[in-house]
Length: 581
Image (cartoon, rainbow, N blue to C red; front, side, top):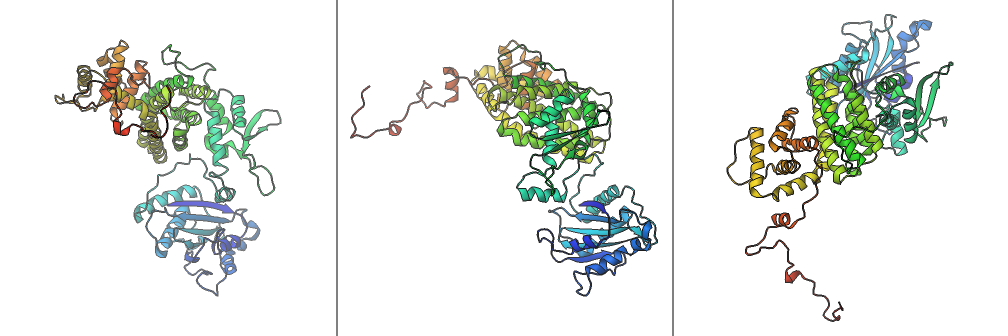
């Protein structure tokens, strides 16, 4: 259940007329009063002899009574909306909910007979509107300190009492939601997003890995946004505004959004604070490898995977310094969303959007160093778009596997501190990352399984025995069940490269916990590939031995070469002459 509070000036006539009117799209039906300050307020919807003017005049009487002493803001308007999946609430339910909201917010505390006047109007099944004036009937002004926070807290209790969907409690750190006018404008102009959401994402992606203010503003312009800088009389830069090309108001002027109105952490002072941790303008490290046969996107993703793993270890320490790491993780996700192939771009953009809420909390970590994460994000952006195949695809799967565990650790960190919305956002990002991972990892893991099937049976059994011993599983004396094929193939490749498979596997297991992994073998595959610097997408075997292993031959056949049955051979047209060879 979501209460949304707004305030306004003037009398209540315009608001009451809207509540009892047809709505902007004729969506209002059966408009009527379900509750009021005295239980006898005029009801223009159900009683024909009552008028909208009568109801507005009765609401406004306390304001008119104090004359010039009336405050500039006199109207309090709260819409209370149930979730689409909630059970049906009748008028009596909504009346009780309205009384609880005005009591909790301070508009009309229970038993206060001289409180503000208010009325609850229902014109749809799933929500009500509460209209009130901010002058009490005794002439005093309403005490509304933290009314929005109090209304939200009461909504959480109402959800529990009525068996409704329970939402996560907010803490005031979330970005501002689009207004109803912005949603209607987007619908009218055929946009999939509101004018506020599109520039918010563009600003986030522009700051991801940026080294200087100049680079940040250049990337905003490259993204197609209009940029307006605000300067003090001294010439110092105070802030910035952005606008979408073609997005204009009724006066044909651009609709500008200040960074701070897009999200609390996108104001210029907050961005400047992040830029103090700017990465050096150099190529990112290559995870200790000197190989140059990999593309720039593949190298930067492998390096970012190692950086993300170190950030995960910081979250496991459960200190407040982890709060700053979330900002760097958010930049890393934004960088991936910009440079990912089309097959995974949508899921990664959704993951970045979801995790945005998890980057903000009231926990401050002033001395945390996030330069490694910002450097990884910068490297990914400057390396350009990755291919969805080959080593690029395998390196992307390697990084996404690590980011899944990192965002799970973020969810646990926030949950331990009671950050319900941030924890929920982290878990939502996890699901999007898992979907993108499955897309990226399908081909390389399938190739590794095929490689395992091509191994000599004794070697394959030896590697499987090593895996079972390391994972603490009982020895399997029956035929190979192919459960650990991809991991066995990875150990075989590591052994060919001169590594000790057993020691390498134990090192990968000891890196961090595996309980949160859905596919333990896959997580270990990517860790070993990164530790031993193995190809993330190995070449498919094509020699006669491995081909024979893939093809199931009929009895009596010894060659892996397939023959086309005579019945399947093209016969051609018997009337046409045989072509000369």
